[in-house]
Image 1 (tube, one colour):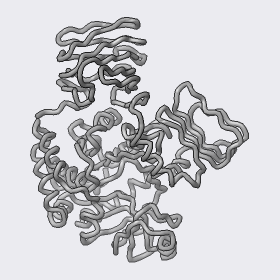
Image 2: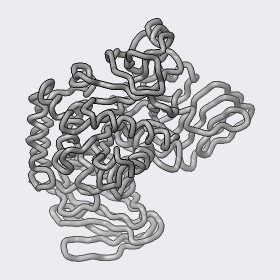
Image 3: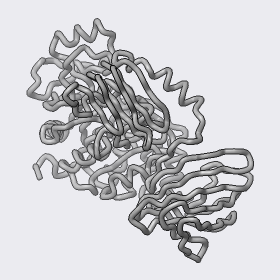
Length: 474
């Protein structure tokens, strides 16, 4: 390993709720964890890039608490304790403060590389080269960020102004600039001294802690206090208390824009933040008519389209289309011209605020479930458990459950008893009984769950044991 990387730690920021790829991405399955554009998720690709820099046990992942099981399942080599779930969304400064405090506790004197989990970077070797250049600068005491040489006057990115137009060597940062309008973006591009802000930062952990104490002292105190209990049973409740009262602020605004001795390393690789449907076009290989197609799609006389079907059993037929985006999933269907794709956010927000929670896949690290019916006196789910996976050992205070196996084999635990339940057979789970289900087979286990009782919320779950680290110690 390079000398520059001998005391390196990587922090992956994976907490975004990304619904810009609706209906492919949802609040339950954000873009960093979905695999609609390839065999691996963007998060898994980010982990793979991190592994070119450090071993898995030198990676910290900060995500939302609701995604912690998914993050651990998609990157099982990272120690579970180092995949940390934030109980509240508070933007990037608290996440960086939390991860930096953990890094300094685990590996005093380390240099941290902070990278978002939802970027598209195909040139891992070029990325590694630039990161190691940034690490050398950070070891001198600087805060360093990667700047992306702009290829067009983008209005959706923040900019970094530097003293020189040299794209080969690190440049001293003059200022951060918020997202400009089109006229200013064109002016920035013409100077050659502006870079897109990548959101990738490199710094000595001790340096960042010093700047946090100076610019966000209350936040630094809260996060450092919680991290004192890291890897103990008190950490989760202490983190919740700290996050509940901390300020929501970005690391750019809270620290980087106020700090001194900041340098920009120009990126020598192709980059995309996968910020929306137009960026997604480059994630799918084109056919001879420049159509980008994934899933069960049937075409006739179509050119220059992005056509995606993620709805099993429902083929998507497209005829006579040009320059159109069509995405079909169980969540919904999007149809728009490419030039209109950046304007759908308000429409998606309306859908998310009013959507019915039934007939929608909620993904979990063990598989997924679909709510078929949700009424005051009962709730019905279709549950699919992947081969070799099992749910947590849990019990409910306000409900019992009836499980009917449709296909596959279920090993059902009830308190100290384990029974096998096959297709056409059922198991009754009384209220208050510790229970779990395991799929010992090689095919998905599918069963119908009927909940009966007085309350059916997902928060009526008390876990005793869980393969995905969701047991909360209080």
